[in-house]
Image 1 (cartoon, rainbow, N blue to C red):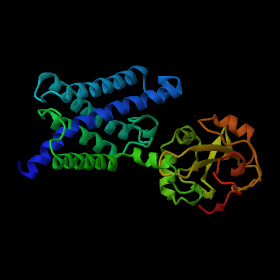
Image 2 (image 1 turned 30 degrees about the vertical axis):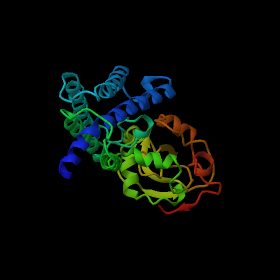
Image 3 (image 1 turned 90 degrees about the vertical axis):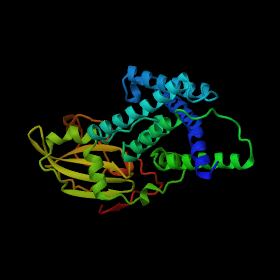
Image 4 (image 1 turned 135 degrees about the horizontal axis):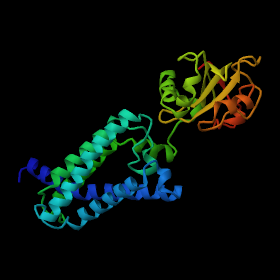
Length: 314
């Protein structure tokens, strides 16, 4: 058989185990996330949707393994592989919808590893997997290599596809971070424009936006691992500044809010402490009643540094 034909045949054969491992791995990752949260509702999906997706992945992955030793043109094998291709085709459409409607939300494809907002890479990966499933339809059954060259070709094709999938998988970056391969947050160079985009995609921004007087920040500065943005606002018929603290990371940064009355003499870059910054969409009026000054970052935010927070213009 010519080399090109051998590579094509091997590529079709190797799709079945790769797809099976990905599907079962995705299901286990979702189950682990749900178990750690002690509730499927905490995963960010409806219970019925989560269960249906996880069971579909587990069923298709198991079906691919069970039918791998049979001729790919058999009815059962064709049904499982066509179902797998349909699942990934639906995934492409779903990812596109999420990216358009909720740009700050991750796909959750592999549980906690998939918290990065949906991007073109995620959609390309789903498209590649859909094409792989379609290519496996009619492929010969899996068998052990009959010679060393055939074994080397099988390994080379499998490694090439794994590298391709890794290149279009946002989860690889999260895995690298968890393994410890990330620069200190104090040294990160995150453009102000990216911080603004992340802020405006956050729930804290949506909750605070009705109170803002102007859409652009009046002041921006940085302390350690956080960037601060101060916006003039009107809260309960009183002039105030709403200050957002955005954690300096490229994807899905944490966002905190604080409200400062404009009548107070405190500056926008003060040093006194006060328990004002807190996570989540805290009611602005409660925050305003409890706060008179912006707290120092080191007292209320994790700067990931034993040293005192370093302040810089932005």
